[in-house]
Image (cartoon, rainbow, N blue to C red; front, top):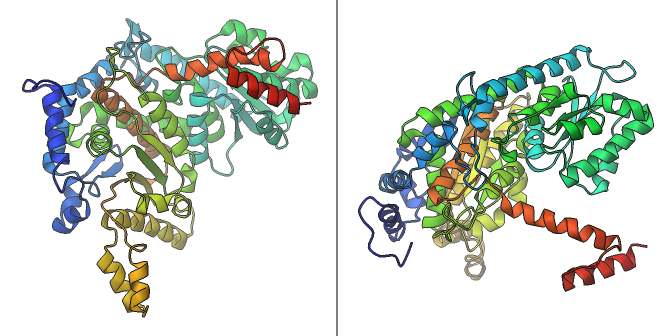
Length: 548
């Protein structure tokens, strides 16, 4: 917003200038000094909601900064946007739709959209999903030879894959009714690798595509259906399939019975849809009770988001901290480090949730944004990340804020392993914040007996700048409830950031362009058309020369 005329009091510009002024102070980005000066900082900068603990104490936030950020939130109408979303208004303005993923886990009668009782539609679908899931588990729905299913294969991509795959990996336990598998990449190597582990006579196949036209999903679905038909017979292949779709004509043509088609409304965005029929694979793999508890955890976070005061509202505070890091301090990326192997796919889910939602360059009014929007999100489970990209985060030239996701109580009985895991997580957060000064590095090397010349030579390499911010989110245990609350926390953070930046977090036009161009390039690869782009034509010629 630099270069604008002097703004009026109470405007977003005025509020933002207050934030920028605090960031521009000499100690604006300081973390270590704040920790050293304030032993009670954790108590004031940690907050609780829906069973989770959010610790913001290892950032450069101060009370003044937080007040300014919340002032900016009020000026931008962030909580007003929240309320409009909850009312079922068409907050997805470029597509004229509501964004009612909260209705997917809400109680009956809680949400409406376009005059329709959205909750009634949700609960009708949930009842059908529950009936199907329990029938499969009880052996009332079986494979075509009468034997029970042992595996469920979900075919989808993007939101029809990442969320359910992440949740199933987190919650599945040995002894569960079904093993779950996910096929998303149109690269047939993925299917060849997966097929070797599956028996077509014991596999229930779900095809997840709202329109039943998604190119990658339907290509894979045809491969898998042919696999079923080869083993079971063409007329029986559809009997081991179900669809998560709204296109009953296309699903019927594919041989899937209408009673095995589970739909969802257009006010459910793909990356927010794991709570809908898209989550059927989760219910089949982890049990209906586990899926219902997942919804309950998300519902608890919804209630917190809708009811908690702004100074205690976890999604708003998380979003405000991101505004501070991205726009006030200029940090263009963020790492997500879950210190629990079961959450290995959480970073991938958040990559889509955040980068597809917030990777926008124009405002709701179609004007260029005046400040950077969504940062790059990446991650890996700890402690693996410590032996991968953490070197850059500790000593690289640009700070990268980190989200540490910790689980206090493990499900295994290996207490020492879990203590080591948590010790590493806490040490990383402390090391990022505090760093190691050159004087400290020199003292440590001298104590070890290194010659003075060697100390002089190595001191710059062993100095850590510190002041690298991180937040920590603590789950008491990894349960369906805590995972539901965690994912909903990040969903609501995304909605808040959309309002902060005055962008639409619920569309994804950037995804569509590549799809359109791929449709035109496909016949060129087959030799039935010419490419319109010279570089594309040259590469296709090289490919065809080698693909013989």
